[in-house]
Image 1 (tube, rainbow, N blue to C red):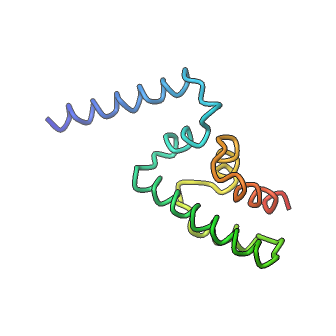
Image 2: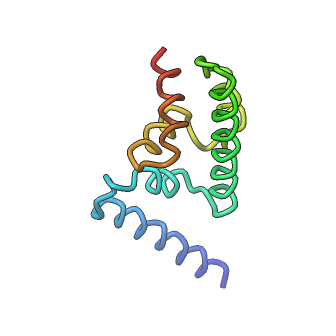
Length: 112
């Protein structure tokens, strides 16, 4: 029974990889990243909550007149799920138009 379930799971993972190859994922690079990095629904929700929190902090800092957001990027990096790389995550979010203002500021920090 367990062997059969394991084979079915492996087959589904294989089909998922094949579908990723044939589907145009250019419009959904962050979604593709979620699948590639095997994030679960809870992990995606945690990411969204992190981005909302960071976005609120960004707005507060901008209201205070701050122009340098590297410490915010550092905090984001420290709290980001370990399955995700910061630069890749920022790029994929920008391409998919997610958290654009926040990710734009992070990209500026990454570029130095």
